[in-house]
Figure 1 (cartoon, helix red, strand yellow):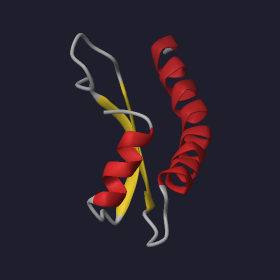
Figure 2 (tube, rainbow, N blue to C red):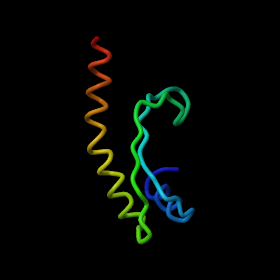
Figure 3 (cartoon, rainbow, N blue to C red):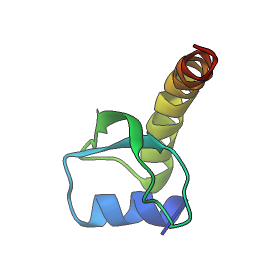
Figure 4 (cartoon, one colour):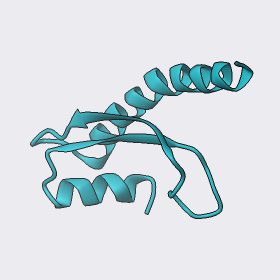
Length: 76
């Protein structure tokens, strides 16, 4: 499951939180070692689009930081 379907499922299941997981990629889908996770609140009036906007903000903030740390770790 990906894209707006994830956000629809989170809202339909009345989850209180959603978020992002940044992980290494391996030969199995979504099973690589986790590097970083961040979460945000799911608001009572959220739509898939409003939740997606907050998820994107987490991605915009954390992906560059995490990528830089991984690259620096590989160089050390």
